[in-house]
Figure 1 (cartoon, rainbow, N blue to C red):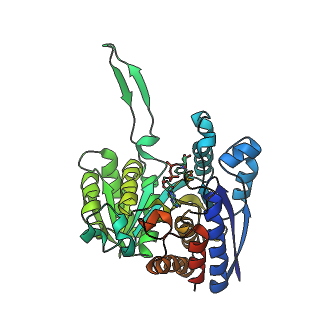
Figure 2 (cartoon, protein in one colour; figure 1 turned 180 degrees about the vertical axis):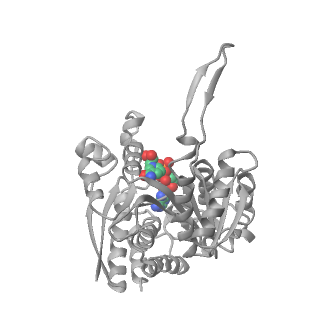
Figure 3 (cartoon, rainbow, N blue to C red; figure 1 turned 90 degrees about the vertical axis):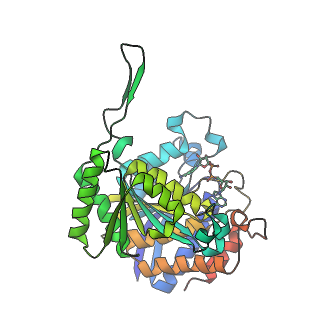
Length: 367
Ligand code: NAD
């Protein structure tokens, strides 16, 4: 029997409530798919500040370095909002983790189950088909990090600000490789999004993606789209896309657009993959729900555990290469939604169950 090693960092607010469901789901999935979980729990975020004086305690980082993946909850809350921005839980925990593990690839699956179509702001005839799109975003390059970056006062008294968009072919190659691997497990289609009619970085991006896909897997159907058109197409007909591959800023915007058309934050998972391979030969990764700590419902047992559970499925898929086990979890969530069970965020005024009941329903459907 395989043993998988990961840390679980529940964080703050609803983090602990939904993490405990995800851990039970992983354990049950292991029994059905012949693996066991070895995991330790560590403080991160606000609770890290309270217990150790810092959002990412040294002991937490060390524990993460000793395993193959991180299952992350969410961090932050009103208690820590008056701290200086640099010390705030999200920034002081997630940014150093991204840096420490060189997490350069952000994967955000946009899934809307047809049963939840009414949650989507899209027209009902579009949403009723459901949505299943994966956004693969480059996370460490582009205009957010390019140098020079400055603001100065000109001779005529105006102020001038400069950001620089830089991409090197190696950065494009490694994110394309992630997209190709992900597409191979899905519909084998990649749409690469750029602005190659205007930007030099996009011309390089497009050429590199073409060469890379040809080398890695010529059976992948590759298309290209300008980012303004992609933003439109995503609301017009999201299911024309299978994998959307794009650079940092475009991905920031498109992945949020994808999240909102999919309805509830409580349903959306995400993965951030690193440059290094873990001890199983797969990418090291950090897996977390798209939402935050939901202070408005924290501590009441009302949170939707689906996003955390689906994050655990992504961890099995990308950091441990366990596709069947990942699908078993995803199917259990799908069947639970199909059965009509709803937490408050997706109940639309109807009867809602709590975190535990939703979790037990998912558990009972793991096969
Ligand atoms: P939020 O995502 O926590 O909440 C927004 C709304 O979505 C709330 O009404 C909340 O109840 C609901 N929601 C989110 N997840 C849910 C779930 N699983 N089940 C049911 N409802 C859910 O965003 P916010 O209110 O802007 O932020 C609250 C705190 O979370 C802040 O301190 C913020 O910094 C932090 N945050 C952390 C992360 C992270 O850890 N990656 C991400 C976003 C926000």
